[in-house]
Amino acid sequence: MSSQKTHRKIFAVVALLAVFAALLVLSRPDAAGNTGWIRRVVFETAAPFQRAADRTASSVRGAWNRYILLVGLQEENRRLRERIAALERDLDAGEEIKNECTRLREMLSFKQKADYPVISGRVVGMRGGSLVKTVMVDRGTVQGVRVGMPVLGAAGLAGRVVEVSSNQSKVLLLTDFNSNIDCIIQPSRINGIVQGCGRDEYFRMKYVQRSVTVEVGQKIITSGLGGIFPKGIIVGRVIDVSRSSTDLFLTIWIEPAVDTTRLEEVMILFTARSSGS
Amino acid sequence: MRYCLSLPFVILMAAVLQTSLLNRFLPVYINCDVLLIGTVCAALRFPLERGLLWALLSGFVHDCLTVPFPGMYIFIYPLIFLAVKILSARTYTTNPVLIALFVFAASVLASLFLWGIYRLVGDDATYCSLIVGAVLAQSLTASIASPFAMTIVERYESFSHAEAT
Image 1 (spheres, chains in turn red, brown):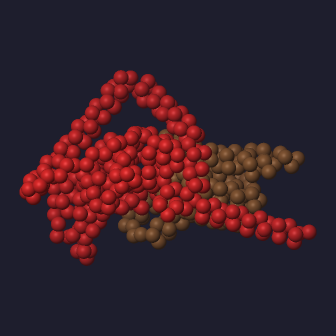
Image 2 (cartoon, rainbow over the protein chains, first blue to last red):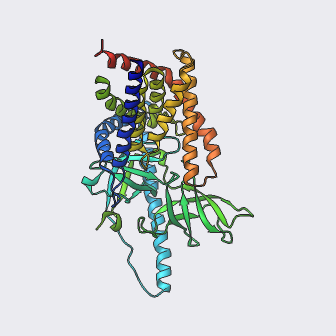
Image 3 (cartoon, rainbow over the protein chains, first blue to last red):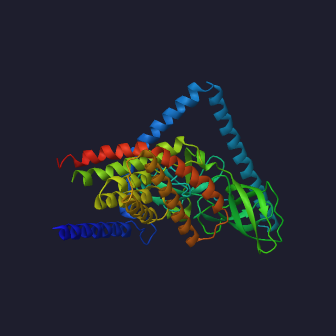
């Protein structure tokens, strides 16, 4: 009798492992890179609950910020911050356009900078763990979102869409270990790879030659190589440069332009390659 | 049957609580892994098959909702579950302090597994500070929350057993 019970237990454990192994296989992205259907089902099932939780959290936080803390001042502060962020964005864009024009004039040619349509979305879930830096956004394939689309915060690049279901998408933030983006240091036009460190406060730029002079405060922007991120989106500013005598390359520490811990609304950029058009 | 039908909903709600509510209100450096706490409590309260189902489902949902690639937590949670199950077979685990200690150890262990995975896939110069800062803060939060979580798991256990009585 006891042996029969043990056999039944072993059978149950093996069956469970087999079922979840099958689920894992089904949740893999397909050949085109689209999210596996079983993961899309989980996304869609969680979506209404996440939205309800987000609404609750927003209203609680909103009530706290607007009424319990200084009424009016908070709202004005928020408006002014948004205005500053918008002006800084315009300034960055202007500086980049100026640099581009100078180079293009030198080459005696002119190329119009690409302009992409944008959709805004709300962050409905965040932070999978201390090391996993992803957020869920309430926009999906129904709204035209595709895997690979760049995601922007108010002040610059925040990440890119890695999985998408009908009404929800998962965004891999720049601060995640798995995020690697080709960027350039704005004044010197030197390329490097910006990789997340799992920290919200900074990330690093790799593969920049030791001979290059990099100064604190310089801006890092996307290079446009790889075709996922358009050129010229601000990623962050240099906060420190590590120069080891044994390393071939510099390690440049960068402060993100977007505070990914406070993301509430994001913009998804419909670039030509990711949208498939 | 009642357990199998209600468990996906319970796990999904725990994941939503974790990602959409708790992580919004808690400070940035503190992350409350509700699903991990649940897995440890399940290891302490449920028999092997039921607990393993809990751990696998938690890992799967966690993978789906937060991790950029499939298969990380679905691997870690069952390992944590088995470790706690084996250890708890030799101890008296209704004491809240012991439960908190189990959860603390499990949270550190999960982070070490994650560290191992990240070390396998790439280099990392800043991980040591993460271990001390984020992981310890996360483990402490989880252990403080564990006695409450255990109460909920116990209630859920009696609910899911109601059909048998």
